[in-house]
Amino acid sequence: MAFLIPLLNNPDLVSRVYDAVLEAICTGEIAGTDRITQEAIAAMLGVSRQPVLQALRMLEKDGLLRSTPNKKGMELVPLDAQFISHLYSVRSTLDALAAKSTASIPRPDLRDEGYQLLKQGRVASQEGQLNQLVLADLAFHQFIYKASGNPFLEQSSTLHWHHTRRVMSTYLRMPASFRNVWNEHQAILDAIIKGESREAEKLSRQHALNSIDFLFAHSADVQETQAVKPATKSRKTS
Image 1 (cartoon, one colour):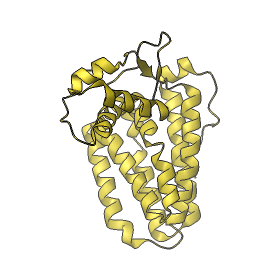
Image 2 (cartoon, helix red, strand yellow):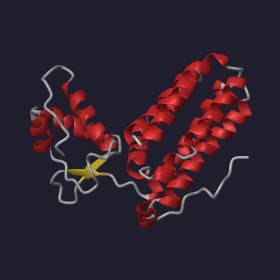
Image 3 (cartoon, helix red, strand yellow):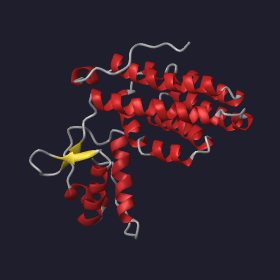
């Protein structure tokens, strides 16, 4: 875990420790086999153990960390099949509602910013920049949530972004994983711009379900740990 750099003391130190460790988890810098201790994190960040303890407790509450069996440190909560299936079931519902709400009226005002986000994603895809791909994907969905005008939708989705980032960073490392993502994003955006709320809703739900289908079809790690079959079947957008 040599990715962590010393932090300067300030009143917001706990938040900075939290953000540093969260980023390392979401990008895969902290692996599933790593044992995470207060002492190690404090030494790498150049801080005392107290803010590290508070930050690790916050990450545990977020469902990202858990105590090791011998209680000597913490470890990542595994990304098993059931966890991923539950996560994407929630995402498909929230994404669909956000798209439907955003497209309740034609939204030509979203064209320029939306197409700029699509462009950024396609560039990252062509260049194979995994971290930028993940961030661009999340930025597109957050853009729709914000445009929905429903603050509760936006807040609800934010609770799950770190889990989504972690899933993407862990499993979407093969070139085929983002092959159709940006075409699907464009179809969703075009439906929103036209004010086609039902189409936007359908495409957004299908997009999330396509993602989970891809994860289970192409990830040997998921298949090997799969205790519960995903609650989705093969789908094609009509």
